[in-house]
Amino acid sequence: MAGKRKKEITVVGLFDNLLELIFPNHCRLCDSETGEPICRKCLNEFNPIFPPLCKICGNPLRDSGMEICQDCILNKPRYILCRSPFYYNGKLKEALALLKFKNKIDLFPAIFKGACEYFRENEFLFPAKYIIPVPSHRQSYAKVNNSTSQLLAQAVSQASEIPVLECLSHTRKIEPQHKLNSKQRWENVKKAFKVERSDEIKGRTILLVDDIITTGATVSECSRALSEAGVAKIHVFTFSRTAGLERKKYE
Image 1 (cartoon, helix red, strand yellow):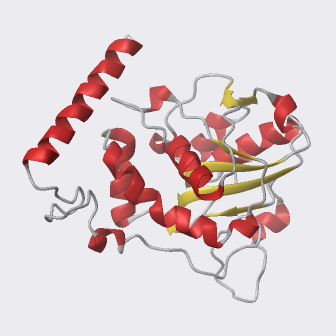
Image 2 (image 1 turned 90 degrees about the horizontal axis):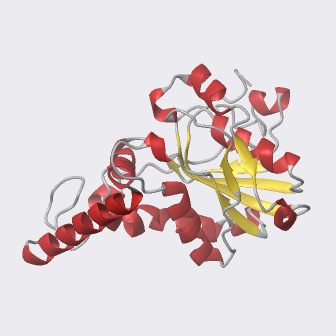
């Protein structure tokens, strides 16, 4: 069954490539004629996140006089810091949906270019021996599964020369996070991750990578598993985040 699905995905990809050779390339988001899968106008509508930010979780702060948000003061995360270059809304949200659920793999370089530029400019924040992507859950996707966390991890690895180590997996089946409310998301991923090849990461500093941080439940639970496996320090980098986190409310 898996082999059949892979063949179908390959055929779809070849068909899309053939169409692009026959017809002018149009922006996947606004349908304007362009030489790129996402036009510059749409890329410029990705909304960057500006300071002031919490020094730990990276959540935008309302008060510029603060350094750490109330959540991190009351319940310090297991990771050292988390940063995200963009908000998860508008054109970016549309682009990720096409990549993640519609197999539009040609969008990958354009989507993550800005994230890689941000990472290179701020690489001093993320010293790490390995980049570890959050594992995808294949049942989360209706048709095909492009693991955006793995794609982002590979892109950041190429930008930084930090190797990727895929050592996180699921302990059980979990439901698609995007279908759940905040409380359900925390319950869904509680103790749902395990670490393989723990001997390679014990005592190390690692960079945990995911595409979106919404409630923070997934990165928190992955950080828990990594910490319990002996990782010394955890940094987190996500491509995007929602406007506000409810990280500690249900932990």
